[in-house]
Image 1: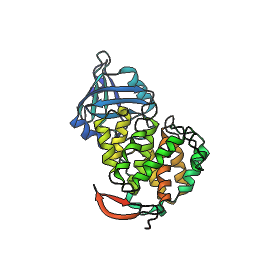
Image 2: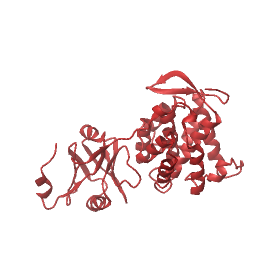
Image 3: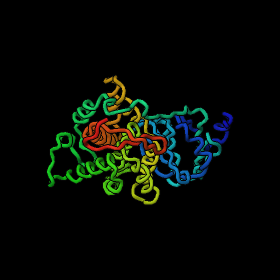
Image 4: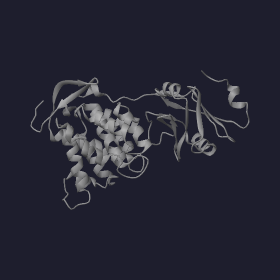
Length: 334
């Protein structure tokens, strides 16, 4: 339902903003959860807590996110000016949000926002040989030169140049233990290294969580990890306050195969032969946030290197939730 144009002009004290893009699933969510509050405010947008669901309203600087409503920087600036944390938000209709500030009520009209939806093309992948740009991926990350938010230096990581007394050794060991568990039938070995990364690091999206997003993106493409990975992580997130609300939202969407367009396009480009396109997409991911893009790339790199360590994985007949599950051992053959 769309309000008349007079709605935005009628009360002089009410500001009306227009949403430009919206994730395709959000209008249904707003129908189910019409009442919420302003959760957090930062430079590129705001987060809304609509009951137990988080919605981002802001620019596309860090990509189009699966719980996102996007608009330009000037509209975001105006929105930030008029609202404050804990202001009530009501979805009067699924395409009309009302910010109920007592002095400066704001309406966000979503009726003309363009829906978006991004999917990782798992159908393109059948074996490690379908990943065309593995070496290019590693070289670009190495050239980028920035240390990950987990304190790992790319040159030493790629050269396996670390000792037990090195600061980054513990993180490297945990990545190896987690990936070895995910590429085996040792379900009980997954949880401990998984917990090492959850919530690790400062910020709205801790570096350890961004790393896990990278692993989940590769899993979405390849289906190569133990099928217990997703339910174990989901159970921890739903039963424990182990990370930030924002990071939890990203992880929960990732568990359902929903990622930002920057991540989705990198994974899809991995199974396309266009090298120039892949390099462009990876560079855009690496530029995301303070270290979020780099940490996500670190997760992707670890997952790819683990697949290479195991050479090829054999497909089993176990299908969990419609996804392929692969059992692997270091000596297995396709």
